[in-house]
Length: 434
Ligand code: PGA
View 1 (tube, rainbow, N blue to C red):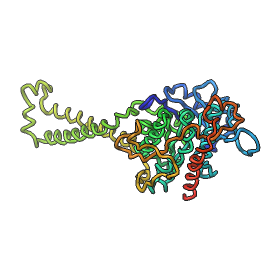
View 2: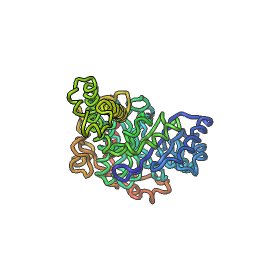
View 3: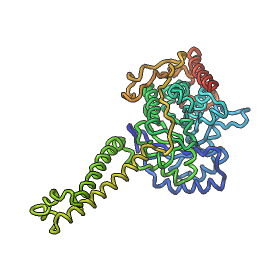
């Protein structure tokens, strides 16, 4: 399906450091077989490097694509343990995750390095999936948007031409692998912020995925949000059926208008039905005998059958009780969908204690001036505007497709470089602070 605009839904499985030849075979068969039934959703998996050959063999000819969990910013050479874009090309990788929080946290990746990885992927015509997300501490301190902003800044600084070929994944660190999921509203708030920044630079159609304990049970309510275009899925991607159920999360519930009016409507009907049952029971107990007798003859009698009021009341009670139970079940279902998870997400407001962005960063016009920025709900702080494309550091000269894929990166602009470096440094110092 498409979302609020015309963005195609995208669901990517991040297998992390899981799998074996034997286990992958089963998983890939399940995904391949089940993928035939998936419509209007791009599905992809990102296995560990050693399994790319197996995955490409198992999925080629299917609608499922594949990618890597990382990519080196370098073209080739003495970089032990790294995997280059051209190597990924050998296995027809369509995607490369960059800046996953586990790499940022465990391998000290800075946002500046993440931007270089995204650039390297694009030079090899691989779509980078740039991951950003705040820690629990960031959220509790009200720094969520500031952290997202600093992580995105060097990436957006690559310019609209490059950013338009990327995917962004918002993955709150506290939700990854924890079973805690951001509520759809919490996720939407950050997605809207990211969308506003993308819109400000002419990249509003970039897909923005949500990641963090996504499963089939909560996918639909997340996908119902206007700025959530799909999911980056970890644990749930290791079970074919669960993974595919995320990709096929019921379209009906994805209409954004459904939750807004259906819940109150069901509540009103349920309350009326509850009162109805009580009144009908009282009437049948004789407490409303006078009122009941009025149904006993004349037109009411003929309308509701020859047996008169007693029959009418027992039938009416039955049907009102059925309505009550249906609305109760519907409310329970919607309530579960809306919460997205039975577990509580942390409540820290995004803007609580929000600090102004690093003054070293270029500042964007206020959100109100940004076309497509959310109205009312999210108070979007000043966002960094991507500097002119010419401020992007020169691409590696060895990259063969540099000129065609991203001509603007060829022109170095030393005077603008410090802004990008500052952005990376800001992120680094934040990491130290953590
Ligand atoms: P999770 O992981 O779905 O297991 O939380 C998501 C991710 O890390 O991409």
